[in-house]
Length: 484
Image (cartoon, rainbow, N blue to C red; front, side, top):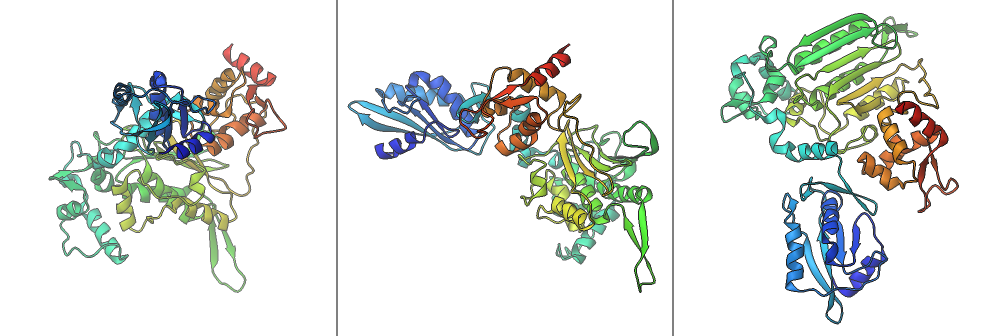
């Protein structure tokens, strides 16, 4: 970096990717920003520039650079930002740290940080844990760990062979020329060093061999009377491997979802129209089986049929920064359980291009039904189907439990208490541990504004840099009543 490039960079002002420090006397605070940028999009930290953008430089000795390098050693896992010095005057220089982004999660002195606008904030523990899990995912995810208490003899060999035959028929696998289940599983990467992997158990285990070690291989099914869970019409549970669960779930849906029959002119056969398209239901079931978090022992796939909707849910959360909104537009396919997903692909149940949720959306639209509703909260991912004749129930302006699925009563109370003094949007995002503005605006900020609990301090200029958000009188009353 030369002086012209330095001046051009400083002219941009502090931002999510640029932090200005007057001197290395502020290196502790600066390293928190380095950590935050490593956890984000990267950027620059400059020593020798005031927060108003005045380049003043500082005396830089070998000891000065050693002090900066020492602080960098407190970042874990080890990170190595480029360190440059730019001469800006007689015996004075600016120290520039060029920081890569996209990794992590990183910590500085044992704590993790994120960048929100020009502010460096502590990363919420739940966000840190999710990122750590995603970092370890490739090598140490649950599905590729050795199976506990089961061997290849506990698997249904006929199901393994059926998977191979179906993959060959669909031209998704070259014929290996063998039908020995143990060798086929090894070829699929489901046996490593002679040990069976968890993915093989989920896919092919015999039903009577799953307990007590694999209680999560469970399907819960219920048909409720009305629109809540207060009364059952039918309630079942089924234990089995993923392919068995996939078939049982479809039978349950056929048993309980109404089918409308009609006769077309000049056609002497009745046409049956199920309440929800079968292809969309199969896709939703396959997604739940492939993407759920099997590391949760008490988790399960659940189907709930109500008078006004149907829900398919699975244990876990949306990984890799995927949000419910992303699922309804083109997105990359990053299955949480790629070994399990690969077996479903070979069977022809799913495609491998990240179009599963889009196919659900398109099938429902073709049938004249509302778009699917996706939610991820409380350790559960839900896809919800609604028939065309049921209108969405409007939310009350004054919430008693939640504003939206994201803005629960707890989140509402946290934000309202925080905004009793006017706050910038970046500060609220930091409080909630959010990094994406659109997610925050759509799922959190706008619902609270529409509910009348928050208000803008500059109402006629929503995008003003001076914009702040403050708790309204209604919000203060709601918060007071909740605290009583």
